[in-house]
Each structure stands twice: as structure tokens, then as C-alpha cells.
Length: 530
Image (cartoon, rainbow, N blue to C red; front, side, top):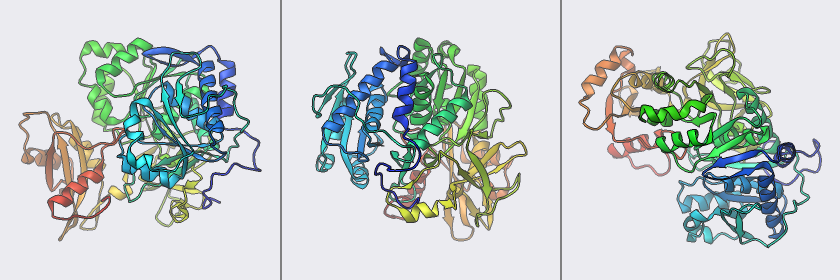
């Protein structure tokens, strides 16, 4: 049952098989092929297999039992992959941690997940050794340092054991990862993803994108603790026999140089990254010649931005979508075939999508409703939150919270998040439609629209925009621009100018912070997330 959110290893069900087994099969076939490439000696599949075996053996010898949770605090790099796979090989469940959270927030997640151990990158020792985390009762604390030896990184805090893999096979229904949501509606919730969820989604992504074993190299600058980068940027290439190029931080020139130096063929990004990449010089754009296509997810891609990037870089962007709870990818525009800009594409192989009304009834083609998903990629449930798990489903259909529709060709379109929709005088206002209009303005760099309570109209739209320093742009100019394309009730009541919009670690604009800022301006001081 979805309500039972324990992570004990299975005693029945499908034959053993999970992420470790899938990876080992690829590592045997492609032992000498590179799988991790960057400004470090390339790691082959054989080396990553040995390094993760060593992590697993150390965790088991250190007292981490089957099904126990292990926190992972690590930036993008070979060490992240070695620790992630090693934790799973030990029969444990990995809990990737957001590097941008405060120690207090991290301590909450670790306590909520009931972790038995914490693994961290030596560069993050100050965070890992913070009193809030040091107070947790753990059986193991593992510090990892990069090393150039064939056996992989140096581990501190685990018994010195040979790298023999432990005999802890995984079953598809066993919990592989607990990914905590951002907590936009209150306390963070841990989505429990099984081995079957991750393997099926990684393989479906590889098939949909046509990833080529031994040829493709996916540049991963999105944080690998995030579901998008973990599945599309790490697991999909690793389980396909392709390679990844991990980068620890996003800088447009640095990304472009890495693409040219290491022959990256696929780039993963969110809209804010593509926006910043447009600022690089023409000579720098020439480093992108090896890229076959880009993938955009995590937030709606403004169509003006998509067109500008594709014209400037001569590289297509494939729009896709999916929430953390779906491992996370549900759909993407096809590499070969019809690509529909503005659409998030077709469901992945094995994934079903539908549009439902508030009562859970299926809606026909073209009608607006909530996007719902079912398939082998859908989470087991929220960690120890049975009520929240039940509320997230219409029977076996997961409710994504996205408002959208399906066209006659089966392509899905997202109009907005249900929680972001604004109701003005009883009429629905969709922030994304307003944002699309704002992004078409030649001066606007970024835009986000949120609702604000109004005593007469219920709610009114408020636009938050970023323009270049010194730009001569006034509210009256933007209001006139919006009136050309929007109804009177859709035109933002106010325009707030910012130097930059707040974003999370994956580059997604945080509308809850904009709402919270508006509440402070109005003298409202509510605890917790808005």
C-alpha cells in the first residue's frame, strides 16, 4: 500500500534487480569506456564500479543496515556518483541534500528521514560538521576526498576494508532514494522513489532522447541532488553506457568552455540558464558545435527565449516536464519526429498521462484540467505521510498539480501550476500567459507574475521583472505593452522592478519568495511558507 512508507528490504515480489544491478551490467559491457569526464582524469565504468563497491563495503562494515537511510551532501563531480551508487550497493536508501539549505533545514530533513549515516564532500565539511548536524545520532559519518588513484576517492570515517561488494541485492520495489520537495506548501515532504522507479525512468529517458552508448556526453551543471539532474544527467547516461560531464557551478563561459573541451553532446538546463547563456560572445558560442540538442525542464520555457537561444546557438531545445514524485520525467518532445514549441511533448515509453477534473474524471482532448500520471516511474508515496500520499492520488493516478491540456496528437501543454492560478472577479488568470507577453518585450530579462489579495477583486496579478541596469522602462510602458495582448483583468496591477529574481539551487524562480515579499510590504507577517 502507498500509505506504508517503510524502507525495509523486500522478502517477496519481483526478482531482485535495481540500480546497482543495472549499473553493474553496463559496467561489465563497457568497462574501459569513460563515464565521467571533466577537468580531472577520466573515470571509466570499471573505476566507478570499483569506487562505489568500496563505498558500499565501508558502509556495511561501518554498521549501516539494509534499508537504512544515508544522507548525501556533495557537489557535482565523480564523488557524487561514487557515493550515490555506493549507498545503493550497500542496500541502503540515499537521501540527497540540497546544498543551499541552512544547517538547521538540513538537520530537519536528516532527522525526518531517520538517517543512519551522512556522507559528504570534503569541501562541504563546514556544513556537515555544523553543530545542528553534529548533534544527530548516527552510526557513521563519512568524509570523502578526491583522489587520483584507480580505487577512487579517499574515505574517512569508515573501516578500511577491501572493495568487495556486499551481498545485498535490491528489488524493484525497494526504496532507492528519498527526495525532499522544496516545501512550498509547508514542511518539506520526502518522495520515496524505488529502484524500479529510477531504473524505468532512466531507461525511458535514454530511449526518448536517443542517448548513444559510447558516444554521447551529457553536461550536468544542474545540481545532481535535484531529481532532474540525478535521473536525466546521471542515471540515464550511466545505465545506457554514455558519459556525463559534471560541473559544480553554473557560469555561462565556464559551461561553454567545458562543452568545447570535453565534447559534450547534450546540455541540460532550466530557462534562467538559457537566458544567461544568451549573453556570451559569439566566439564563445562556437564552443557548442558538438551539442546535438538541449533539454529544458524545471519551469516553463518562455517561447521568446526559446526562439532567441535556438537562433543564437543553432541548437534545438527539447522541452519536457515531470515532478520529483515521478522520478521525475513524464514527457519530452521527441528528438526525431515532430517537435512542438510550447508543448512539454509526449509521454515517455511506459508512462501514461491524462487530464482530470477536480473530481478525478478524465477530460477530452483540448479541455483544461489537472495533469495526472501513472506508470512505473511514479513514487511509492511520501515518507511517513500517509494522508498527504492519499491526497496526491486519484486512485493510481498521481496528481501533478499542473494545469494543462492534451492536443489531438497526444502532446501535452502546461498552462500553469494550479496553486499559482489567480482568480480575479471570478475569472481565471494564468500567470504564465502574462509572463509570455512580458518576455516578448525587448528590454525585459526576467519576469514572474504572482497573485495578491484585493478587497474588491479577490486577487490581482502583480508582475516582478528584471531589466538591464539603467534601462529607461516605466510601469506605464509595461502596462501599455500588456494591454496590446491581454484582457483588462489580466494586465498586472503593479510592476515591481528587481536586480534579480529569487531562485532555488536548480535555477527555478521562487514565486513563494515574491509572495512573501508582497506580504511584508502589506504588513502581513505569516510564519512559514506563503
